[in-house]
Image (cartoon, rainbow, N blue to C red):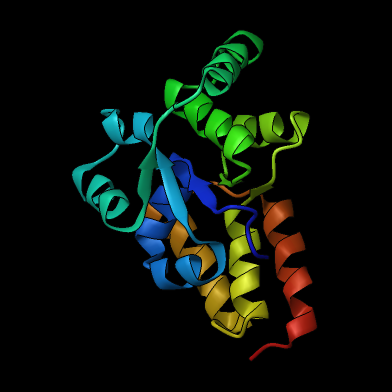
Length: 171
């Protein structure tokens, strides 16, 4: 559960944690927490989400030639990745950070390059594992993301995740 050198959140993870307001837990288990400067600078974030990023996450920029080379490589190999996503993945790769994302293309790129990653449901499950939340609370949090935030989680993934939580009981 502990990160290598910290964790970098992409836009999907940032927005999820903005909705969930679980920054303290995330900081306890995945610190230090980072965000790509390119994501902070993008116009894709709503003001409250951007403010949360500035409050809880440290910005990192592409700071080495190797990072920039990876950024360019990701643009060639996965042209649908945004500038912010390419930066996030490049920074994770070269700083040995866990990449927190629910974006399918980001996750697939992380897998292809053997970059450690985590997803929101995995984090919610770890909240149960660490006894920060009950199974019922974790399921309610996932429901909140689906209903209130409008997050899409496939029914099969959601069912499999809910079944996986049964090992902790129903309390």
